[in-house]
Amino acid sequence: TNDKEKTKAITDAEARIQDLTTKIESYTAQSARLSIEQKNLEKEVAKNRDALDQATAIRQKQLAEFNGEEKDMLESISALKAAIVVLSKHHNALVQMPRSHVLGLAATLSHEMQTHASLLQGVLTPSERKLILAFVAAPQDYFDASPTFKQS
Image 1 (cartoon, rainbow, N blue to C red):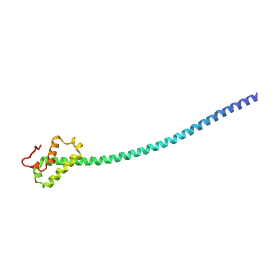
Image 2 (cartoon, rainbow, N blue to C red):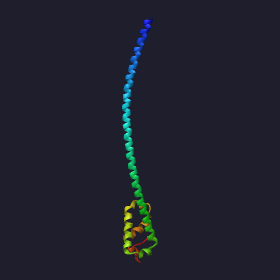
Image 3 (cartoon, rainbow, N blue to C red):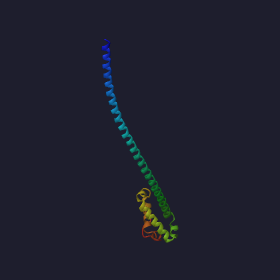
Image 4 (cartoon, one colour):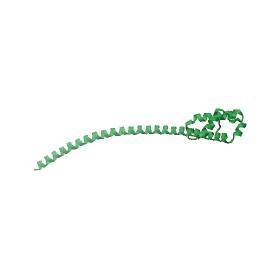
């Protein structure tokens, strides 16, 4: 009876050894697969970090460009508003200006109107725009005693 129990224990142990060997092989294969997946994911994370760094650098560059353009546009708007004030309130002072200064003012206004036309659409009223365009078109005629076009 002792031999039967020993034989059964040996058979059970061998079956258990076989089962554990199969599990070891399975877990070893799974470990290898997961190691490969981990390496691939680490590469993907590194690639995504690089892409994020590049996107961040591009965004910072775009922000700097935008800030520069915005500053230029705001300065242009201020210059145009100042020109409007000068044109609308100080006709006599402008008449006293030398011709070269008046022509320079007209050239500056013309340049700013062309450079920032889309931006100024929402800033200038139609009457202000008409006033500026009339001045730019004929700066010397604008101050004549009897103008050849309607000034408004």
